[in-house]
Length: 153
Image 1 (cartoon, one colour):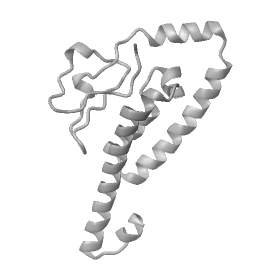
Image 2 (cartoon, helix red, strand yellow):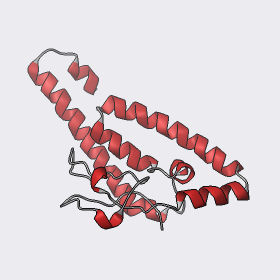
Image 3 (cartoon, helix red, strand yellow):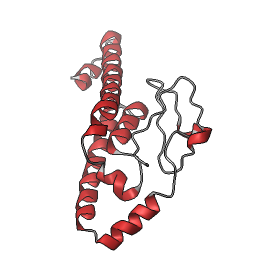
Image 4 (cartoon, helix red, strand yellow):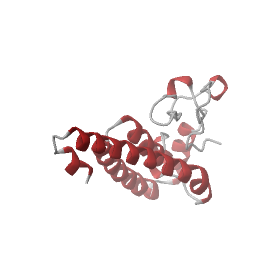
């Protein structure tokens, strides 16, 4: 529907299309934030991609894509990420106990939190840290929400 409005050359149709896309992206970011805060901590498992690679979770990735990309690109990149997460799940299920110990040792070497470099002031003044290289003690995100979807403890 949003793309259909954009095809019209009338300025009102184009502005409406842009407004709908921005509202859709903001709504997605808000819903993902709610999921991360209220549902994810209680579901009993973690994102396979995050567990295997020690990176941000899929929900955090999608949230970041909604902020940084246009809606169509964010959806496309999210689908690709979910495919990689499915592959990560298969890899995790097939890994040996020794491989699991090595991965856990490698992934537990860093802190998790919000670094100043990870804070972006965009769409909803959200802090989207990269959980690969974080230093919780130096985080200063002002009034932004600096609670990543990371489980490093």
